[in-house]
Image (tube, rainbow, N blue to C red; front, side):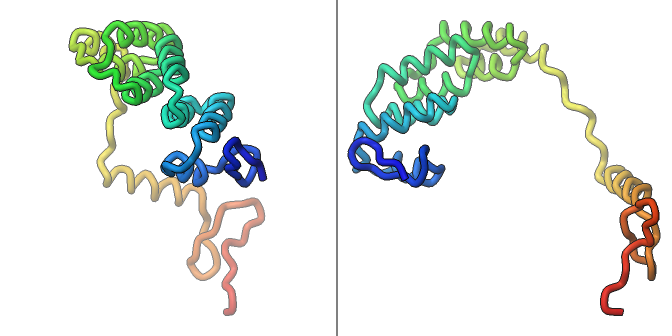
Length: 179
């Protein structure tokens, strides 16, 4: 059991998901405890969660730092979350374009698309969406079922009494229990 600033106790070295949820939602959780948890989360790479804790602790500078980190690393989820926490709405277009360029250079068009969609940049979105591969064709349900049956039959052998068991060298199928 660890004790955080403000005499807040957690079960282990880091808070569980339930402890995080409860501490973040509880208005009585002291700011130093929230800041300590935010630091733990940031060190563990859980930046979006860290931003929420920094925000509740009143550490606007830390949330702003994470926002810049999101732009610099092409992380649209972090950027969008920190913009919302800071009330930076509408989303800053210059940051969205910088984030999109960074994400695109890293081969992450979905992050680029999210940033451009946030600022409703239709031209940028059209260009990025052209880079995103289209979905594979979807098989009709009947074909999926036929494929599944064929795969099952190819990997299973007849067992005793008509039951099926996994094919295996020396397998005698599924034995009947109690009969």
